[in-house]
Image (tube, rainbow, N blue to C red; front, side, top):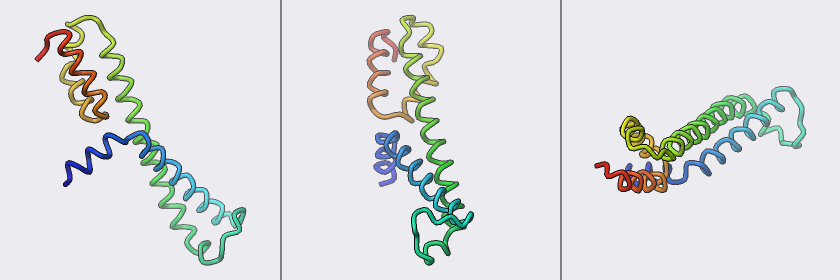
Length: 123
């Protein structure tokens, strides 16, 4: 069961991180406007009583979403840069790091690595 859930999050990393960032930003902004006593959204008093919780939860969700998004793009850029090489020796130097990075990215990138391994006859 845990494998299925982690595979789901790996396959949908980009949309999940974007949604997480947006939700975190919205909660954080609701918390900030409530703390500053600016009721732009005309929220009820019951919602405004939760302002400090929105602020704290929104901050952590926003930071988590941004980190998740940044790590996805960093891993993706590393993978694409290293796979673009036409030299077998360069690929062999980074092969173990590429395998680790491929596990953190969607299956499309694992397939790209397998194709490159077949091209250079690497086991």
